[in-house]
Amino acid sequence: RHAAWCAAFSEDSLGQLHGGQGERASQALEAEAGNLEVAWSSLAGADVAGRTQVALALDQVGLLRGTTARRLAWLTPVLDEADAQGDTHARARLHMARGRARSYTFDLEPMVADLRAAADLAERVGDGPLVARALTEAAHQLGRTGRRDEAVACAERARDACPAPHNLLAVAFLTRVEGSRDAGHTGHAARVARLWAAADALEDAALADQAMSVLLQLDHLMTQAGDDVGGQQVAARLAAVGDRLPDKGRRAIVWVAQARVTGTKGRYHDAVALLRRARADLVRYGRSDAIDQCDAMLYTYLTNTFQLDAAFAAIARYGRSKALHGDVRGVWYARLLEALARMIAGELDVAAGLVAEVHDATRGIPFDDVLDSLVVMEALVALGRRDRAAVSQALAPFAVRRPTGSNGYQADAIRVVAAWLDDDDDAAAAALSAYEAAVAAPALSHGADWRALADALRRRDGQALAALAAPERPLHGVARVVAQVGAAIGAAVPA
Image (cartoon, rainbow, N blue to C red; front, side):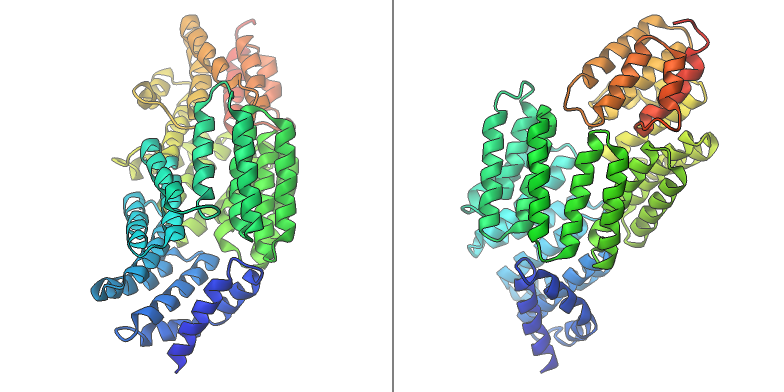
């Protein structure tokens, strides 16, 4: 009787998570976690459907607590049972949950395999919304590792799997990809209208969490196109959606999103204030799934404002959490972020040790945004040691493939200063030309910092670089290290 009650309770609570009773349902699941674990054990081999409900409920508890290993331990045995008994819908739901749990680790291929399996099984039983959710999640994971064609194919299948509003996250993903390919932003107005309509439809359907996701995609489009007025409208709407969410932890997630918008525009002190407010509520309401993101962003903006002790504390929390949850990729990322702050603090040998640790741990791993950041950090260490040959060796991978995100123009800035070491004016000019072209876009994240650095590099002005690197001057961390080294080298040669 106890196990049957737990299965029914799990089903009811899971159904309430994304509605007006979301916060209450989350709290109830956490309160009953001990009973749910007992039921999970007692239902083994007896009731696959009931045990599936309990496993999915425990997975939600694991998400709130940030315990990825436990989530996988609850889901995998039940999935094996469902496979053995041929319960197609249970298998689809469990694959979906396990795929999302694996998104907190570096297990890209098994994660995507789970999500695709969830979509295929859900399609067999006619669950279009689950097909769309699984494939949209797969698209995001593939996209962030540079596998854009596969990501687009997943999103297109998700879009076609079911009607609105359940396919609108896929529509938003494809709209963002379209925007990234439109260098002239000629279709910006049409894309903005499409995403505003999607956000409206999701709110009308009481899917506020998904509306928030669409609004974040919309904010990215505004940033890409340099549409500051539109960006302010999106930020206001995010705040309004957050205020209507009954789950106060979710409202704190909105503040994290707003902090990112604020920080990319160079308002680092304001971003820090928003993130500290958000983190307090995330801790208070048990949203451990978002605390790590908050700490990583706090580190960034604390570093940019030269609050280094607080930055070290934030990244230490992030690294400990990632290690606890078995997220190897997150541990590497934390080491690289700490290395950057150590370089800013003048602790070059400590930074070099951290970078070497990540280098040794990642041998043979396919490149993605974290490992592209490793290339930049290795080049920065070499630049700090005034070793141009080592800079060239570190940046060699970028000579044969396109680096992700901001890593490309950061590498160009490093090349400029490295060329000064040998008074190689031609190499410096070529690197500067590439750098200036990359940072000219008005919508560039932290664009004012990168353009200020470009101006000082163009003039090879040691005093201007020293002023950029000064502790009282807010500046992006990588730009600050380049300015610190460039000030020492550039000062030795008249402008």
